[in-house]
Length: 338
Image 1 (cartoon, rainbow, N blue to C red):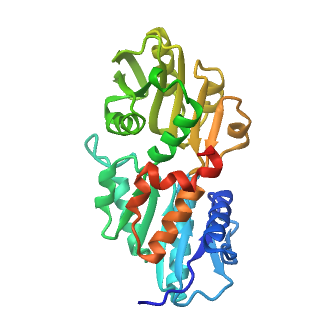
Image 2: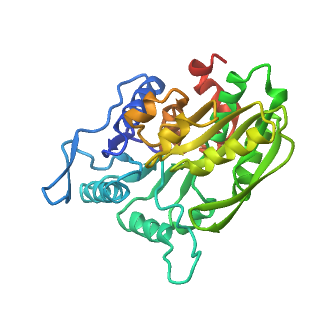
Image 3: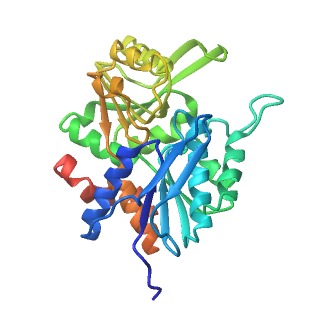
């Protein structure tokens, strides 16, 4: 049996509250205090990132917690430079915990003379010395193949299914899971299967990028509680328009479950003024004050899932077990009173 040192966390600046929550959760699991290692991640006056680790990490199993959220380039560089600092400090193994993997929407060439930025970012991460990735709901599952290192892609669906069963208890027979576009059908079908609900699709046709010409509902939603499921909410234009189309088609209520709340520009205002009764997002991206203050936006924590994923990676046990609602039920027992 290989003797392993305790897992050690280090956090960038993208989502410090999540890093601290993961550390607290790991402390509960381990029965001992777990805290991010003492380090500073700062910038020179011209914006250059500087990292200094104040603790010995030689031979340690290190986990960098860093989303590549807005500003995406700054946070990506922080991740790479933290990894380089750890590698040059003789860390035993470096795992990047990336709750939100930026550039994932650029996973293919949609037009001539465009990049595949997700592959470029994958190459940069690998070259920085990172040996494993733990992430959540990649925009496209095939991005795992862009890496030449192991990638564990966790899913929000098991947590969302627990949340839906808790908040819609006694009304599940009236719930319909809705995909906001044809590309997200697999994700919506997965959640519908977990909670035993029907599935519908909002088919959208674009005249040109950024403009939605027409939306059509495929499936029966009249008199139903519609739950829109997607991985990213950016400006919320498509999401709010889909909610309006569902209400026009006879839906009694519209709710949304989105993994990554990017929330750019007018997103919060649009959601607040929309016909949606609620939008549920995870804390994979640190929420702004506007997001936390919005009356119809609710945040589901991912720290319990990531803490268990980190511990399973450290111990060499199954990470795929976290794909099952049954596995996550006891982890989220305190939140949903299961």
